[in-house]
Image 1: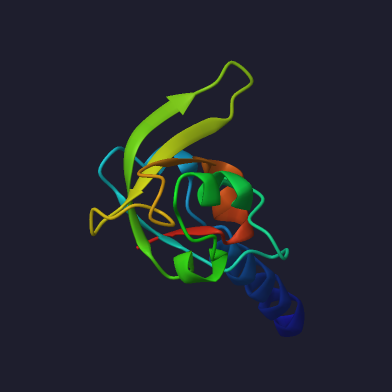
Image 2 (image 1 turned 45 degrees about the vertical axis):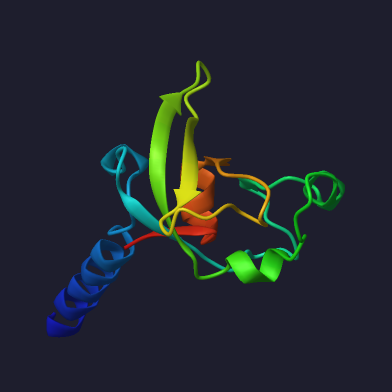
Length: 119
């Protein structure tokens, strides 16, 4: 009997630990986020411009340099399909890749994949 109760408590405790992820509804304008390493070779949920557009605007297309950078949410919009899109800019005031001041991101998917994390 004790083993069954202990097993149930273990399952409930594990579920509560995993359920403490960040809810996109908790993020608001002015919150600071950190850009993480994507699961795939490219960022999928942060809408960084393609390399040719960065180069055309005089920037340097090095996507590895954005990992670990702190960004601030400047705008938050919910689309008709329910997705929450945020605009983010770097906290130091500089541009992404020396060419783009602001980029968009799908908040829920970026948080779930680890591309963005709340500080």
